[in-house]
Image 1 (cartoon, rainbow, N blue to C red):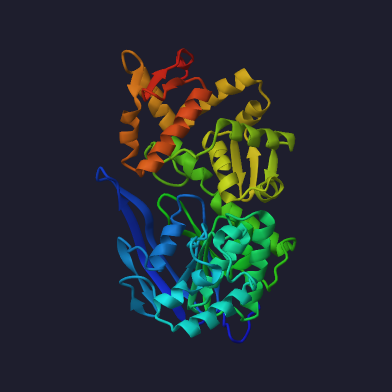
Image 2: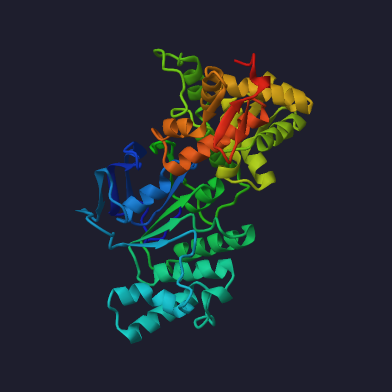
Length: 450
């Protein structure tokens, strides 16, 4: 990339994470792994993006590096000194703005300086300078409720920059904004960075927007999910400002899509128990192969779009046309691959024969096909149908399955997994669900599916 003399691309290490592992313990004592032995270094003069799907632990990793939570094992150091609390060289910008509504813009920006014991006159001078820098001059006395979402996030940037941190951490800072506002703020951030106007030496940003990562970062760390591990590290050697239409930019976006969707062989291996070039693996379980959180209607929509495009298309093109980000499109892709209705190859997705049949079927036939593929390829749906089949009255309480899921998921994620399975099972007429009673009952149509 092109850098200024004041920002060497491989400057001194600011933050180093070494084999960071983080697990949380559920109320029933089960250990839930979020990060597994993650190591990286943030240097002076670079912007690094942490990119991954939901469940990759990228926000947890950011908080470990900020010293807001401690790793279960491994360590984080700031300029060579291990952290034992909040990282003194870091300021953060959050997705939710995190402004105090009873304070004015200027008072919100002064908070960090006040915590550092900076004198009132100096606080005022530095806060006004930061407010001017991020384009909110004239709104110093306004309250957050008077501001648009983009203006509130500008206050968040000013509050983070005013303390002149070594590292600016950003946790999906643009995802709560509309497309145009987000694009404007990204461009302004790049302008401040390239012009050496931003009083920071490095930036670490969490995102699930692939183009955003390629647009902003010098390095991209792609995390896998459940638990989070660094799956790939990419260098973005492009001058700024970057042209989204440039072939090399588009090639990098394609590469990232390919990395993020490179699990289809893992899914197939787990289901057949025979990995390519290796020993047999255990069959997939509801814990090892979680359900993507998508609705059958959303999945059907994706398959119908692909069928209308001749059965194949590039994921970046689909995402761009539908205005989807990673967490919008990739769960649908994962579900299609899991159910053997589609295959991915790099950044492209294509219908399988079964997927083409599903996309072109009438409603009744498509429901029957969905039921068959859900039982065959979705472990949690299969487990529910098998358990209901083996009971005398074909009825079970949902608590049985929640207890099973708590072995590998938090309470919230276990609930989401079961809700997704219920949605899929009801759509395929495999079982019925009484929410008031928390009861599942095998549907007559399920007979013969197993």
